[in-house]
Length: 193
Image (cartoon, rainbow, N blue to C red; front, side, top):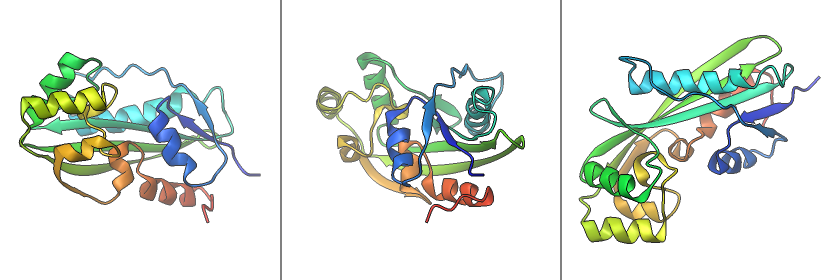
């Protein structure tokens, strides 16, 4: 029997990425506390939260394959999350200007039927150009990326803020590493093709 696939995320970006695979899926809100633990590294945070999000909806979907994902933007061990408003976005972009940021995406595929959770981490190193205050303001006026870690949407106008990208999966930067997800789905007997 084919297991239903559940995306444990309210992110429209993750939903759009998962839809590219052409597999039927439903979406559930994981309602997970995303507060870092004391002395938790950014990478450990993303991995822990990706699994926590998947497990958070398992009681509602006890027979499903549940996808959880979380992303942190980090420089020198400091986390840059979703800014939430214009002022914090400006501050983030000023801080990230001229720096290389690790957008680390945690991915979990949790088999609620068997209790098996496979977790992967996918880093993407993103170089930000040296940004002027007017470029930052112009960008945020045209594309208010207040719900994006690092205050930039690479799949949109935010690409103009960047000088380079290095990673194994361009989808990881948007929030759902599809190459790794396809691998995890195959491990669970799901054929994408």
